[in-house]
Amino acid sequence: MRTTVTLDPDVEQLLHERMAAHGISFKQALNDAVRDSSTPRADYVFETPTFDLGEFKIDVTKANQIAGELEDEEIMRKWREGK
Image (cartoon, rainbow, N blue to C red; front, side, top):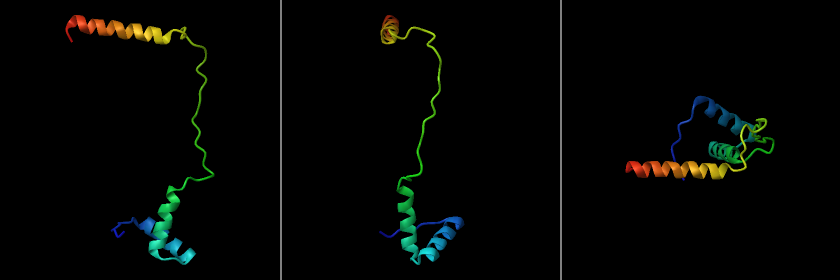
């Protein structure tokens, strides 16, 4: 596929350095760079931070029941108002 790409000067320099280091064409250097950027790095591990939130302030064993009752009350309020 042929396309026109406008490169920032620093990116162009990186490609020229890759070309010189590996003895490859501009096309090959660009294709390799794009492929390299889409390959997951083995040395990078994403970790989600976790936090201790302490003890529950309320009893959550019936949270779904309470949420359902609140939703039912809201539905009835809207029905009474004609919404």
